[in-house]
Structure formats: structure tokens, C-alpha cells
Length: 404
Image (tube, rainbow, N blue to C red; front, side, top):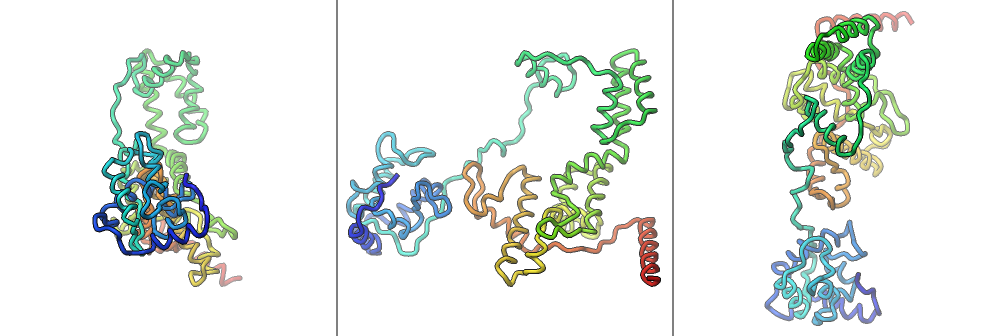
């Protein structure tokens, strides 16, 4: 993009000119007139973490590394002015070209000595494109005309017709029932249930009667205990749930199961999704004294955890501090990947180019979880039967220990 260094004497001469904090003219103020132009149009690509073309434009020292970029007192020989000038300028690559007034300000600034105040670091202040497709509200789309009643079937049928694809033959009653059982419970149906469904479904006298038989079995499967186990596993996958820590030693987590059971119970009780989400992100604050407000926090601690980095090394050493940073990053990533369908973890190193997330956004989120640590936590919320069973187990364990 910019011509490389030609000679050391030229570099030294230009460096001295740019270093001088004395303006040769009084018309242009860098911080007021020039910095906003560079921050809004150049810093998104030419910053310290994302140096497009190996050119950084965030400080006077960085600029000095490319003597041909700005030649103090000689605007025509300055590459920066060249690439932003003309009807089809090379820069900025993204967005609108600089206005004539902005180009004129840069030209005057160079001619007046290209003064850049010592210690002033520019930041990327390009207006973020909040008009991103994934951040837009969901809009209703007219349901296409179709022979099918369900909207999903109607959309699929419309696309199928557009692609000139034909339907496969209708599945028989046994196949339909097995699909239903596997989809809702993850288990094969009992033979007696298959016989009952087939008899009722094939014996129905009309389409509406068959739909009623189908709906009855859908409700029956959804009301079963197995439903939460089948569909809870999908949420546990999102939550990174495991019963070991991962990493080198992969130690067991003997107390991971309450969160697993909490998820299954939430699905089986048809808990509102808003409540379900709040319990898992800040349940102890939003629902103090309630068992699910504590159990839901297992979401934050369900992912991999570096036992060696946290306990055997510790934060007194660099590896321990890195482990803590990665642990907070894992929590942030999980919350936003799952609940916002948005990746934020890349912004710990650089501003996102393809969605409106900046490094400062990421580290603000980091601060939210800065005081959170993973640890076993005692909670009250067992039913009388569970308390009775627990006490019996404890008594049995203590008896075995005494006899051994």
C-alpha cells in the first residue's frame, strides 16, 4: 500500500519533523480537526491489533515507521494524501470516500508540519453498523398457499415446488409412531403402544379423527418423564455440560448432576424460557432463596475448567492468571453464544469486522464475570423425600466407614 523506507537519512529527517510538537501554522488543530477523520475512516483497518498492509495509524510513533506515508511540509509527496484523493480513491476500502473538506484538512495539516501531539493515541471510532441482519427483529412473512395446513409444511412445499422436487410416499402408521417416539423421548415405543396407535389411527374415519389420535399421543409423549431427558440433552450440549473438568487431569465433577436434573425438570415442567434464562445467568441475584436460582448457575460452571492452572499453579504465577482469564472468557462466550446467538470471544484481541462488537464491549462483559469463581455450593431445596434419602445415605456411608 505504502512505499517502504528508502533511506535512513530521509527517515531521520522526517522523524524529527513529525516529533516536533510545534505547529508551523495556526489553522489546523490535530486533535480537533484531523484525529476524528482518521478515527472514523482509517483506524478500523490500520490499528495495532489489525494492521492492514502492515500500516498502523494510531500514534505518531507508528506513523514514523513509514516515512513516505506523511512527509511534513510536502503534501504532494505524502502517500496518505494520495490514496484518499481523486474520484475513485484507494482508501477507505470500506465506506464512503473522504469528503473534499476532509481531504483539504489533511492536506493543510501536512503542509503545516503534520504535528501530532506527543502521547496521543487514536482509537477506532468508526460508527458501528447496527443494521446487521442478525440483530434485526423477526418479521412475519405471508404463508404461501399450499395444500398443507401447517405453516412449516406450506413453506417447505413452496420451496419444494420451486426446486421441482417430488414428495416421497406417505409413511405408514408404524413408521410415523416410531418417529414420534424417538423425536420426543429418544426411545423406541412400547409394542403395546404401537398396536394401540395403529388401531386408532388406521381405524379413524376422517383426517380430523386421525389428527386427533396423533395429537393425543404427542401430548402423552411430551408429558412423559423421558421428554425432559431427550430434549434436555440438547440444552446440556449448548451449556457445555460435562461430569469432568477436561484439560490435563480431567478430574471428576461429583456434583455436576444437580444442574443436569434441573435442566430435565425445567423441560418437563414447561418452565417459561425467560425464567429459564435468567436463572442460569444470575439466578442467585434474581431469585434469592429459591433452589432453582442456585442450580441454574451450573450453566456458568458447566464448561471446561483448568484445575492445574487454578489450583496447582494459582494466580501468583502468569499461567494461573492466564487460566483465570480463559475461565472468564469461557463464561462470557457461553452466555452470548447461547442466549444472544452471537460470538464475542474474538473481540478480546481485536474489534469485530463483521458485526458491531468492539474490544471495549468484550472487556466490559469481562468485568461482569470478574468476581465469579467456580466452587461447590451448598443449597437448600430438597423435597422431604430427598432429604430423607440423603440422610439415609449419609448414615449408611458413616456406618461403612466406622466398620472399615
